[in-house]
Length: 547
Image (cartoon, rainbow, N blue to C red; front, side):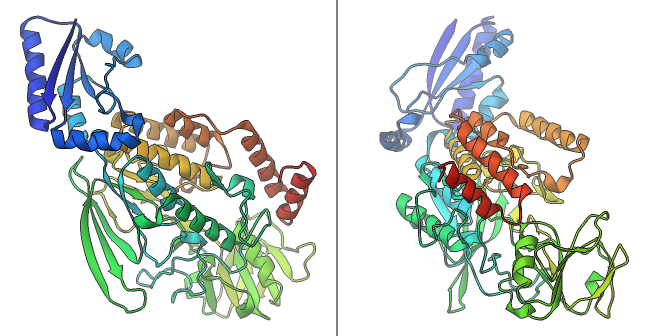
């Protein structure tokens, strides 16, 4: 049996009528069938939705709260939801099983029926693509950017912080983290967004692995092409994002400052949703576990504050770390320095001079440092150093986010978070783009942004809070069983499976196998020939006509 009722769109009235219908049918001993309660918005809302759907036909579907009275039918019917054909421009069909589900749905119905006011924190790569995707879903988007220009980590700034190591919480933070000579570690073919590729665009540096200026010019071009600039508020530092009661949005407090005059003012606003895209390269992680490191009297800095090699001319420099920044900076400093010593975090490495270099040594792990400037390694080798550079990565830092303990950071793990994007208790109204690392950058950020924008508009659905939390617990348990440290929670490990998973959530075609094969070949070369991977990989591509 199927019964249909049309009720006005009002939370209290709608819930009351649904409850009344259920009680009536229960009184009449109706214990099977489906009731469709069509929730019709008021005329003003309907007008807004109709106007929106002139440009967004994808949302032109019927919204109905489908009440299942026969619990025996729930599982099967959830697999094949009942829909009602209609020309009314209303959001998609949803399925509910209890009055509580209906109430929760109605509390969140604004995200299904009208555009949301969404704050995006940060105008770097992730913030820009998030803003583009949110606007495509007709949301009202405001991008809050601390600095006076877009680009995030790709903006070079010669300034450095007063605390070169980055420990002092009261220091004035310089967001820029790249050094002047930095080149990309990824080829053009895997950079850029799906509908606006980086490949084929040149802004003065045609190399396959261009310098940072080329990426910034591409992002500026992207913003102009898709009209994102009008959405950005520059010189607006977010100082507080605080969740209200579930379904009621967030208080967002931002500090607006004059770029040169020194004035500032504070603005407090209410947003329906917040997308955090503030990056993860501002709070340095420092090797404070080395005995004596905090008392060492000579110069120390984190790679965050390295810009050019000249200040290290004729010095003995120790570099802690073995990632890309340690590799690049050591080679650049060696041109002017007296000696460069690379410290391994492994105890099994024996000190030796590197091939092709007269003044670079690979050393074992540091045992301790002394107040006279001595650095002692675990293989009993000692040197007297002038400078120590920490190329030791970054911590996640979201000091403005206040969620009453729902979201926290534990050893570079944002918890709890589903799919590296959604905290289940606040989904989809709070989300993150760009927490991942060790993988492609542009395409994952784009897919995450699409997922967020469509979840907010109701064109894709998320699992229940319980299901998301269960998925997260399983993921953490698998990491522990495999011995993967907590700090690698958001590492993609150069694997393309995550892109497939996101594509499946969106119901779109997965990335082509040719892209996956190309990326796998590149990663193999990157790990196998770190000294010259850029040149040799480009040569291979020229031979195979892949440029």
